Length: 381
Image (cartoon, rainbow, N blue to C red; front, side, top):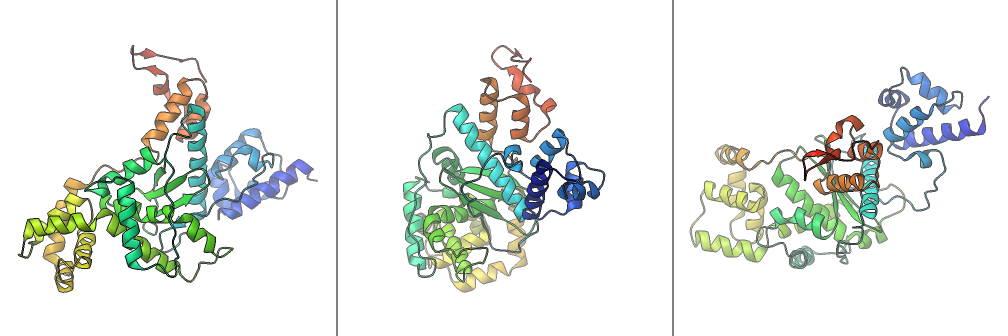
């Protein structure tokens, strides 16, 4: 017969597993159990759980052990994660849990190292999702561009400004073909999750798209319906975010001036348009439609090029030279903070390994003293 502790663990594990959309077999495989029957027995309170098993279950379910055991109350509801519209995948709940876990670890690191309050607050702007015009969104993009001081090539400077100046926590993951990006904003900070396998120019546009959601977060959340039901205006909200993103990464005045200076009254060649898109760090399609919206080229000129195999081939031929290395899962700043917390003695090797999502044995480099080229703190565990 199950005791109270077994019943508590059973309920907690089952509730968390179901919330993440995992089957008993999937949880068993991830934890390393030989059979899903072990999870079934555990969730019915008919099996004692070893300490290492509980720790592994908590890790797989992206929750800390005190919360899993009901020893740590969760008083505030978890903030909603906004996803780019598209085919929802079965992995979304797990990806959201992993994102929130990483954000929580990032915040703890900032507090440990003493840099939690160094970032500027990300600005907030009013928005009515149902009534906001494209003109309003264009003006909003211009205001954000100026306030964030993104310069003449915003697509290249945006990520640095988000991370270093405004403390936005950016993570990459293998999201597959059905997901592009997501964002979340809480009371303390904001985060963006990006598909690491997409092209750099698509990622840059997605960062601008997610920024729109972050700077209008409170306005949108105040009218978002309760529960999981999507509002009737959710598609329009995504359209507004795309309009904002195009206006942010391709500022109207700068693009208009450069276009007229480069081409005067003549029609630009295909190669010149591709070169211009690469110089702004955006896709040729994004540039073409932006030029159309600025009345610099005709609708026919856009469609003819997008429908042209020769233009598409020319475009693809320039891509490898501008395709950076696939970004790692964890931000460089996050990794630096782990190293600082470990070397100051505020983070154990096992905790550092958990934060870096690695095996403790792979972290030998954290004990290396770069100044004299010898091991430092080598005895720490």
